[in-house]
Image (cartoon, rainbow, N blue to C red; front, side):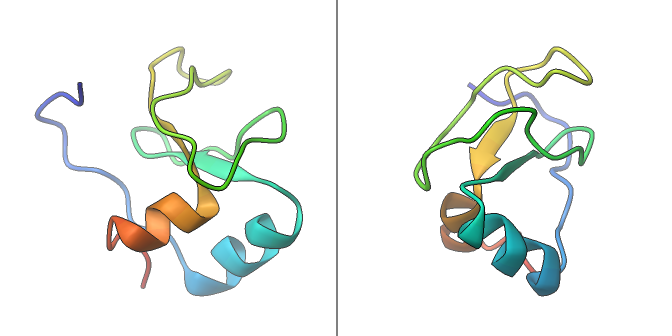
Length: 67
């Protein structure tokens, strides 16, 4: 479950790169995932902020968090 914090938005260019590298980002701190994640990953633990906010690149597209 996400908290009330406003999720970070991501640039399309960084999402496109992450899609090629099985990457994802934390919607709370904006850091890329430390390890490869599935395209539909949701709520993985972030190595930078320790919150469960890492989502796969394709999932971020579906969540409309990409500019």
